[in-house]
Every structure is written in C-alpha cells, then in structure tokens.
Image (cartoon, rainbow, N blue to C red):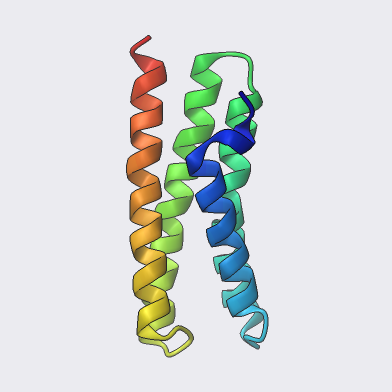
Length: 114
C-alpha cells in the first residue's frame, strides 16, 4: 500500500488543489498564504506520517494533519465572513475538512490499538 491509496490523502489533496485554484486571484497575500498553507499541510502530513517507520511517528503526523484541518476550517469561516469565499464553497470546504478530521481520527485510533 502507498499513501496515494489512502482515501484521506486523495480527498485532502483534492481539497488543497481546490483551495489553491479558488484563492489564486485573491490579492490579500497574507490570508491567501495562510489558507493555502493549512490546506496543503493536510495531505503533506498524511503522506509524511505514512512514510515514517514507527506507529508513534505516523500518529504524530496524522495528528498534525488533523490540526491543519481545524486550522483550515477556521480560516474558511473567517474568509466567508469577510467576503473572500462564497457561502457554497465555504460550506463544502468546511464539510470536507470536518470529514477529513473524522477519518484521520479513525486512522490514528486504528494504528494506536494494534
């Protein structure tokens, strides 16, 4: 198995690409940088954790990915309120980030109870 086979990685990579595309024209460089970094951090930490040697390291990186999903949700809420994101896009991204958090939680629990 490869990290590319993980549903969490595939979904988070797609979400990250969506965030990058949507935000590409935003002229608030600070906000754009923060939201794209948190989105990118999710699949990157899933991949890095998968490639680590121990289950403890793997769980740590998956916790980082879960934290980044929470960070992304916060930025989406704020982006929606300040008019950078339309409501439908924000709703979709928040839902996807919440689902990714649940999947990551299950993945962490799964390797911790082996």
